[in-house]
Every structure is written in structure tokens, then in C-alpha cells.
Image: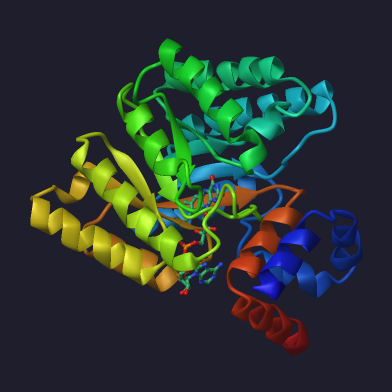
Length: 306
Ligand code: FDA
């Protein structure tokens, strides 16, 4: 638990990246979880995933931009991604973070930037997922999503909920009334016990409760997890309720449990892999280590192997 807190803390110290990146081998290791620094590298990774029967979601890594010019650059990057999806014919949608579009500078700026991307995606027939970040921005993220959803269709824009948050079950009920496409995940940030369950069992139980609510809603949702227990719970619920395999999708992160990704795709489940790329890979990479400190051994082993 301490190592998770420490790693999440370190994930916020971007300066450490410059230190780590001096080691060429570190870069080699990060490519296990990050598809590269450019769109072309992400496209190549997605082609491989598509060949294995998995769809994808692009994620340009750049959380918390410092000014509106940087937020504009993020919008341009996403417009370029959408163009590339059509030009290359890959099977992928996109995931965005509102802090990347300026949420911490001005929520209205983030809304306008997200709207530009959702409008272009909708014009091209692609789906945009609004990722969920720390609890400091949960409500404003939901508010902006609802505003977007009032202007665009169910299959144009969706949102993410985190089962570690105490509020999530109620949020799911509320969002399903619109309705909305939801990705349920456990949650990846350090949160105080007032807002998030400190006990992993409660997070897992809440995950199952929300998953069941989503699957019964008749809307196409994303069940994002690498946890075999959550996957098993989803499959047995789906079978018990007579829900079709193609009524939802499993989602996992690039490089995490690749064996399970392939297995579920082979068994005929819709499997989407979230493909992060970009120069600002450091906080994302550190959060993946925090989730599973055993990954630190993977990193060290590879650094030593050379
Ligand atoms: P959990 O962390 O409980 O792990 C269960 C088991 O899964 C582990 O025992 C291990 O076997 C395996 N596993 C998990 N993580 C691993 C890793 N890094 N390496 C190797 N094995 C691992 N979070 C958020 O706050 N906002 C968001 O928008 C998103 N978006 C998102 C999209 C997608 C597609 C996924 C899969 C995840 C997210 N997340 C996220 C991250 C999510 O909240 C969570 O931190 C991770 O998925 C880890 O939780 P698990 O459900 O995998 O279970």
C-alpha cells in the first residue's frame, strides 16, 4: 500500500522523468506499456492489435496542460488522430482527458476544446471517451460530459466511472437515465477515504454492482479491468441474464495481461485495448507500476538484462 502511494506520488513528479529518460534502457522498458511517442508508432501498435482481433482506443498522453496554447495543440493532435484513423482504416476510437484540454485553466475552455474533437469525431462516425481523472474534477467532468451528450448522440461520446468512489453507483444510475455509454474501471488516483473506499474489497464489490447495472441497461458499455475475478463475475452475470456477448466490450491497457486480452478475443468477446502514446508518458507509466508493484521487478529485470 505504501509503495502504491509512493509510486503515485512519484508519478506527479514529472522532473524525475528527465532523470529516468537519460537511461536509454528505461525507454525500452516503457514501450511495454506505452506504444511510442508518435501517432505513427501508435498506429503500428493498433494494427498489430487489430490483427489479433482487438479494437483500440487512442490516448495521447498529456495530462494537465499549462496554458491555452498547449490545450490547442492537444486539440490539433486529436484531430490528426481522427484523420489517421480514417486514412489507415484501423479499428480504433479515441479517449480524451479534460485536463489535457485545459480543465484546470478554465472549465469552459475544456468544454469548447472537447466539443471540437467530439464534433469532428461524430462527423467521421467515431466515438470519443471522456476519461475520468482525480476526484477534484469528477463533478465538473460529469457536467461537461452531460453538456456534450445533450448536443451529440449516444454513440458519439461516452464517459468513465471509477468503482473506488463512493458516489459512483448513484452517478451510474443518473447517467443511465440520459442514457450514456459508460466505461467502468476501478480508479487509478490517490483518493481520501471520505470519497473513495480505502478497502479493495469494497471497490471490487462496487465494481460488480455497477457492472451488473450497466449490463442490464441495454446500452453498450465498456468493462475495463485486468482482474480475473471481475472478468469472471461479468461473464457469469452475462450468461445468467442471457445478455449477448456483443452487447458490451471488455477493455484493457496496452501491455497489461496480453495473454488475457488474446484469450477473451479468441473466445469471441469484444476486446478493446487502450493505447497510450506521446512524449509525456511518465505519470501514466508510474501509475501502471503503482497498480502492480511486481511490475517494478519487470522494469528492473529488463534494465539489468540490457
Ligand atoms: P486491480 O488493480 O485490482 O488488479 C487485479 C489484477 O489485474 C492484478 O492482480 C493483476 O493480475 C492484474 N493487473 C492489474 N494491473 C496490472 C498491471 N499494471 N500490470 C500487470 N497486471 C496488472 N482509471 C481511471 O482512474 N480513469 C480512467 O479513465 C481509466 N481508464 C482506463 C481504461 C482502461 C481500458 C483500463 C483497463 C483501465 C483504466 N483505468 C482508468 C485504470 C483503472 O482504474 C485501474 O487502475 C487499472 O485498470 C487496474 O485495475 P484492475 O481492474 O485491472 O484491477
